[in-house]
Amino acid sequence: MSNTSLLFEPFKSRSLSLSNRIVMAPMTRSFSPDATPTDDVVEYYRKRAVGGTGLIITEGTAPEYEAANDDGRVPVFYGEKPLSGWKKVVDAVHDAGAKIMPQLWHMGMLRRQDKSPHKDIASVGPSGTNKAGGKKISEPMTLTQIEDAIQGFAKSAGYAQELGFDGVEIHGAHGYLIDQFFWDGTNLRADEFGGSMVDRTKFAADIVKAVRAVVGPSFPILLRFSQWKQQDYAVKLAPSPQELEAFLTPLSDAGVDIFHCSTRRFWEPEFDGSELNLAGWTKKMTGKPTITVGSVGLDQDFISGYGSPDAVAAPASLDNLIERLEREEFDLVAVGRALITNPEWANHVRNDTFDKLKPYDTKSLANLV
Image 1 (cartoon, rainbow, N blue to C red):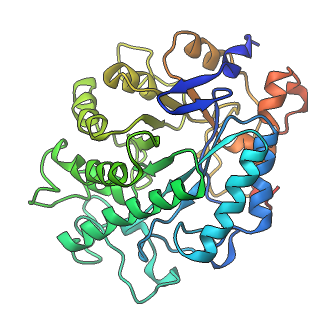
Image 2: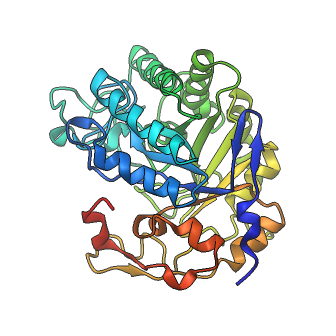
């Protein structure tokens, strides 16, 4: 095993200072009845902070827009009761010595209206379809609806700042609303929010600008994006380095501080002819810090066991990860499923007690540990 000390070097970027390079990746858990974090949720995040994680990015939480999600047990980020629950979370994490940011997540056309707490409100998306060539489910978003969604993100980011969070992450990946605007398969608009790949970044860029206008120049803004969609795991939003740079430039210019580059397997090169992964290319093109993610510390990606109640992913070597970190390919490392079963994952890595790490078991999702 390579020397893991690099993972525990402090990180600083503008107004964000972290004790180490380990980030808890956002993972939906659905343990918040009435869309409000409970004391069990508070303890869940506190344990990861005590366990040595430097930055926690919360599970996806809905911005102030009633058609943003479809699960009443997923916490929202607006309203007196949910925000009081989030205040307990942020205070507990800070008391344990870590930093924390909420991830603001709008499902768009992937929201199942019939499962939603707001069944009378239609799901929204750029063109009313949930996948490329898909059946039209609703009307395209009006300009008023687009502006309402933008302001919903901005309002919730403002709440995060007021509660004492250390920044905010905007979920622009995995085929959800923002990504539906990015993707030509779901964005068929002919106005300023559609068109070329660069034009299709306007919705996300406007969200970043609106958030910045509310939180000011120093509050960190992260953006998570991905090449793949859950509607099509093989698709690439930007098939070449040149197209990726064109896509990233307006987002970087809008005010993104750190890019969270979602891949299924962090060790895979993003383009032919280079070993750089998506985080590596993004850092090279924007000059901004990046977070890598994708099966860190496990021997199987999440899709390999998706839908199987008996799927198990065993602890895996970090050698390739450390080699890339040594080359400064990226700045931060997000850990997902390994932290579900190992709240003290970071401390075990720091102390070289890898033999104490448990494998990830799909069955563990049934409990909040």
